Image 1 (cartoon, rainbow, N blue to C red):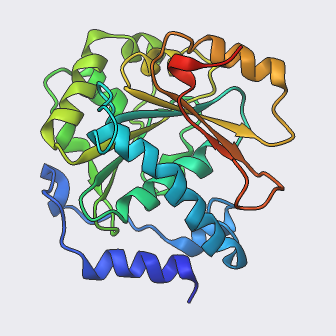
Image 2: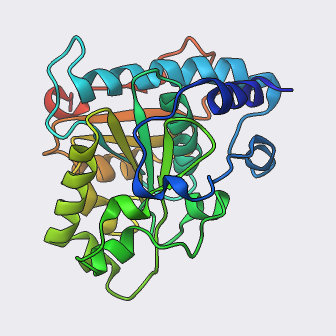
Length: 270
């Protein structure tokens, strides 16, 4: 049994469950490491320990800003958007692995929201494609978003599927209803961190809309692949945001290299 499988089993079997959303009575969504690994969304077994350490380093500043631990708490800091400049940067890989790493915290509840409405990879990988989700609750103001959150078999990890697509997706995400839903997700559980897996910044408008609601934005950059001018164009869209971080993905450098950069928002260098 690999390190990831042992960690998931420990999470699934030995830790108390967090306060449950109304859907807790439903069958839990199974997080199958073998399926995720074969699809390329978990690391090979020989790289698990190294990657786990990297995600521990990545999540610490995010948790600190979300809850004000040792640093000033960021407004809406428990709402975190993950995005990239272009497709193929490793955004969904980062979203899944960050969610699993955060769920390993003793006092953090994690909600992974599939907000990549054009390519809902999270929903597909977790087998919840077609389930009611974010777009449905935006379309129908009478629905309680908590009722659409699905439990997983990993303690403290929940998922909100994309939901039913339509031609008004951008308008729904830009609506006042979206702002209300995001605020409700954060308010309902003070221990909850909400991760929004969103489309690339330069290929759709949805991500930019969602970054205006989130207190933190994480931009995934693929090492030796993302052109610098493209990255700068994406960051220009976020220049007014106070808390933007970058994760360098697939770096050939060692695990001790500076692959994670934070604090881009306020004191960035030209």
